[in-house]
Length: 113
Length: 408
Image (tube, rainbow over all chains, first blue to last red; front, side):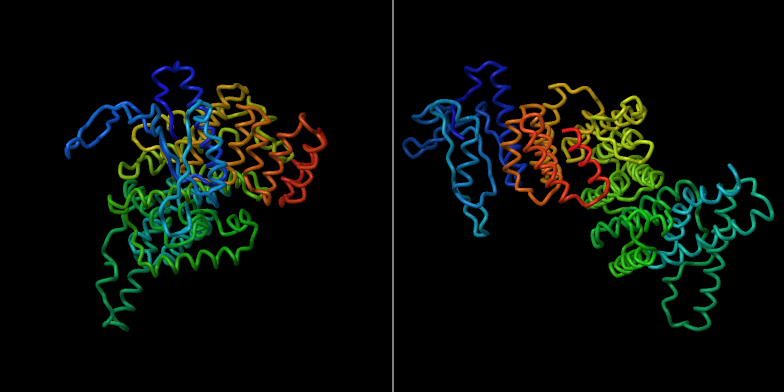
């Protein structure tokens, strides 16, 4: 999930509504026995480590050129990339213009992605 | 209490204590001996009490006779061993002189240790439940057979095989090491919950027996809360969960034994005292930093003790199911979650989610779809209930589906 730090400009009620939508979305995947693990990645306390003149530089952000960054991830048991894409389409972060979901395989040799 | 009721009553409360103490004394490999000596004790009571009158302290009488039976047994065997098999490892034989300790402390310890011995991962969950009913709860073989809708021979065979397996594994009657306690406790809790469900959802029609199963499961769980080694938050959570469920036991059946669905239950006969006890144990369960599936299920069960259909109630239940499914998937949790979703977010959304569940061999799935379509599209509702009816296995389920179709 890539999105902006919603806590900066959203009301507590809006945040709560997003939270419910996200929990219902994950619950729906889990109800199909397709959920493996996942978590949100809160923005507070986030650090970015880059290299400048061959030395590591630690900053509080911004997160590169783009405004949004990885806000969380979920690992699912999908039979195909298409199925994973269908799960991703249901994620409430996509309601925000410019936010995105990225589907990636997990490098494993057991056929579960 | 009448004399004819007294012995069965004492059998239920004392058999398990005597058997656990004797078995701990002799070692698990002699469990049959412990069972035989205990049964013999009750047989003696049944033969002598009607003639000589009930002793002033019947329980103490039973303990004394059991101790004497055990001592005589050991004496006979020690003579046998000395005369005939002197080369056999005598050290393994328990000394005749060792006093059999029937103190309350030792009775409790022995029962708790026995619980861990029986609920051992080396035997199947079904065998654990069977042995628990017999050894930890003192149910008769016939009662166990009734509950599982089978005959005495089958139960005897099942229990025999389970005991053989535990002997092969050299199971000792002791509490697990502190490093293993969480893992072993998980098996014990699973067995207790199965035992409870055996009573709560049993196919048996014997109401009294079913209720006894539930209360025995709660008693075993309570014993775990009373020992500081086994008193973990998830134990209290399971106990809370069972209290909440059991509070509806009487309301779940009509006078002629038919199942009464939750919505139609008379909440004035819900057991308030059990609900309060459930709340107490749920509070006790909030001490750790781990949320177990029992915590979540107890939370769901708590919300069901409030009959009023509010948004708050269903929203909480939905979120708890969302969490539960992430910890442990089960078809029934997936179906219940979808029902909660319909109450919290509306039927349309729930139908869409239900269709993704892939549970088309489950009659509860079609009952849920029937429920979701009713009032929106009664033709579809009826179609789904009909499929449910063709898939349902028990008479109780079939009857409740037919009743549901009739009111569409």
